[in-house]
Image (tube, rainbow, N blue to C red; front, side):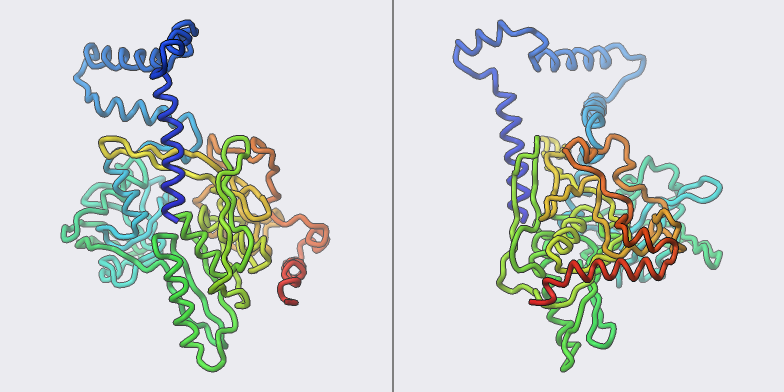
Length: 450
């Protein structure tokens, strides 16, 4: 799967290289370039930028850091594109590589930015890795990190900078201020950073031959861990056998494309898993399932929420389109774009959107997300009395400059199922849920009859 990611990067690099090398042609082509209008020359634009940079460096009232100015200029360039095209300075690029590789020096917390009623910001602990420094210090889900080495969270420009401050060399210490809002306890804790290499999969038996597998993200070896977890669950199930599995993709923000394809392939025996399309809908890649080793008969439910994104949506969309699983939860985030990483000479990284993902049924994931078969969660226009799983998280479709489905000839699906039968159920929550189950059952019936 990493091969597919590398190929995307290489193809894009070749395209850029061709453009940059356009002036290296025979004399006749050079003459043609000279006759072209000056506005057609990208070199004139680069010369204009170089002159502007030189003027600032020579005449600004205070000394400036030329490197930081160039970084700011590149960041400004990509800020005119979609929200996922970004420029990462070397330190930020290193954090991204650590996330992809799945091992890094940290304390074992998964956090998001939170805000108190008085407006002050904090890091909201959403997950704690078992046996990590944070776990050993009794930091738990729901706790709030208010300071990092004496600095309030408000002093960090964004979540990424705060995470970078928490991470560091293994063996070094960091002091954090922790509040437990339920018990009203505040304390300071010194944590020693370790190599954090959490398992991608957590699994357990629920009883009666049923089990749950939670997939945190899609790092390297996620597919292998899923297969290993299934094997272990079968051992624990004993004579009654494994009768069904819940695959929990809630709060799974994605990861490697190849691992998403691999996880879907565990449960789908044939056909397309995901399509990748570039400019004007041109097909770039098409990943297919392979029959050997497929868990094609194992009953499967997939849980998703607002924070299920990217690779999670690829898996959920593939299983839904193949009638392989029932999707339950909230409409997913809607991050269906492909980012190719371009590493620059100093270790900084240009992450550029190059294509979009489509489900096997050719549904566009970008800004649309995956609509669950059975909606359980907030967001229903009839205000079902269920809490929002991530009230602080706005979906992709609300992000400024997001890539709009209509730009690619696709309509945005409704926020919830608007089938006539569901609408006819009105505000009766139990009846609405029953109707959604019947519709999903009808969709899955052809596979169940095999």
